[in-house]
Amino acid sequence: MALIKTKGLIIREQPYKEQDKILTIFTEDEGKIQCIARGVRRQKSGLLASTQIFAYSEFVYYPGKNFGIINQANLIEAFYPLRTDLTKMALASYLLDLMYNAYEFYQKSPEILKLLLHVLFYISGGKARNDLVLVGAFQMKLVSYLGYRPVLERCMVCQHDQDLTHFSIEQNGLVCRDCREQSPGYLYKLNPAMLELLRDFLKQPIKQLKDREIDPAEALKLSDLLDHYISCCIGKSSKAYAFYKTMLNP
Image (cartoon, helix red, strand yellow):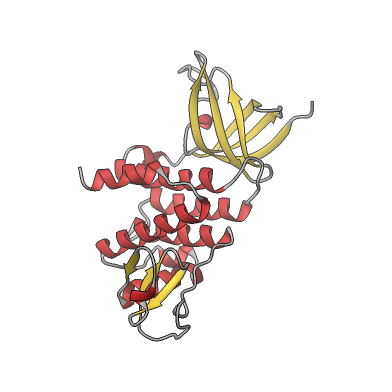
């Protein structure tokens, strides 16, 4: 069987047998795949660094019915600082969890993979004023790319574009002050700064958003909103985000 070469980000790992791992890799060319990496739990393994969680590597593997078999792996970027800062690690783990939950195996999304790598680069390097702004931008761009773009220009009830004060999960977008009582389910209240940032998550590139300033509590509320929205859209919730929230409120 022919070998396949592709670049990819390890988004999940689990021990397998005594010395091996099962890796879930989001690749540029093949989408989300699973591969067995043999012997990589040994400290002297030549593939140790390139087969860690968060590692972006070039892989050569034999495809299989259920699992590929890693033949070679060359590390491109390890994002090492994510392993030394618990808060950054928790946020980055959440982003990997989103990728795992949002895509089926062999479903490709090279654009979102590239976006995720940019976000991890800025978070890992401490290059963002507020990491949650980048997380929120990734959440919004991901859910929109999946086909669930929320309506942020008008009220979902009356269709007017004034006094938009709340986000309705069930109605996939904004509602105005007058219509909020008619909206079922949970509503997230938004102030003008939060609404502006929510819209900018869609319109502006990550490189521009990394310098954005916002009140930390408001940034967290937007991430809560978008995590809730994504969970409803794809039918899966993230344990990694729940873990991140426990770190904030031990």
